Length: 544
Image 1 (cartoon, rainbow, N blue to C red):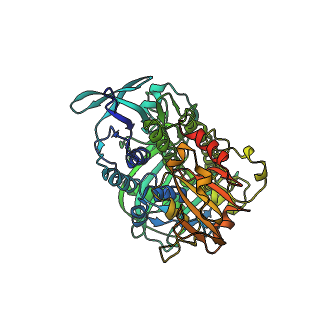
Image 2: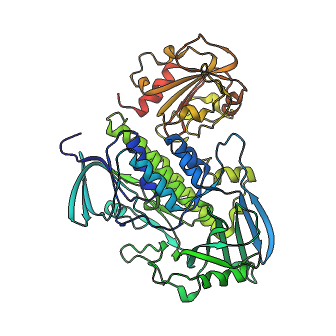
Image 3: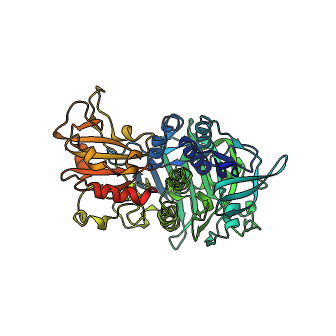
């Protein structure tokens, strides 16, 4: 490390987004400090929905088992209008998707990520607040206020995961345009002893004379017998006024605790809107909260970046916010790791904004529509709608660091994922040693860039990679067609597509090479595999 730099990356904010960024950086050997102004983790079940795509990323990191053990399944949603049961939404996904929807209190998500980070010897530095920072060509100088005074930290990069009122965003001078919803809401963590199906959220609405929603109750299941996180409109006596932070005018998030709802406030809404006569009990916590929808004009500048709520805020509809932020962090972390190593192409770090800002813009717009009109506001078939809510349709086909589809005109209208799209999982891959079939995601776990070479022969790697310096950064596997052959012990390791599932899901028409990025997206799809094509992808990601 440069003698003038204290740490490679300083992460501000130790919520799920900051912890994901720090964990992935440390897993890749990048030195990192993570600071948070709070003295301890908040014991609140704020963000509770875990999307299948987030679980796929946690699988890639090697921590998904801890999350699965602590979660409960989200099976769907029951919708009631004026006391009458209406639509029932089942959260069904194609069988090849390895994970379903889950519910996990935010404090548990943070605990799991914090314990993962601790494996690498990195702990959260609490009661440490970012006061200011300046950046130059060589790094970022930040001033932290701690319990013992002020401290200056010199880092190569600074990542702001510090929420809706982000000091990093303000320090960069980023705009944060949008607006706020007029309504105020209550959140509470309670037990409800009704006989509704386990694993289903409940959305119960009352309509006024014009058919508009004028009263609302949403109950999301949590781990524990009959336990739910409930949200509902707040009565006037619990109003927090504008709720806007005087420092930035943003009205978003939990109140200051001075007007927390009581069990009687929750019960009053249940008495009006619950589909069954029921009594709430065991109030663990509650708060009033406001909702805004805003988006930054850019996700970073120079050596400083923002992610999660520091970059985009929106209604909690569909549990999109935290999950989108976690994916921001992942996208940025693997690119920062290459930059710290001096191995990044100059276009790599700017691609964070190019890839993730359009995603943030789409999520803000969609959640605002869904908050006002319901999840069916978008005219999509149910299967596509479910994949979108699961965040499995996020793609980067126009990214400057994927091999663009127009480089392969033969791909137009073809089946299977193209460059910039998510690499799907598949089963039935049989190796030469293990006596059991494996899933593709088993091969990708805890890997960086992975080259998958599909065809009838398993020993074509040398011709594809010879003379490409960055090829040494790839982990390679051969995937043989059902009738393919390979010499025993051929390089790379060989897996037979025993049931043809890989060929079907990837839409292969012949020998094909796929480069899977660290975040699980295809950086390149080469039909047929060529050294020139692979070299073009590698040259756009890695420094010569």
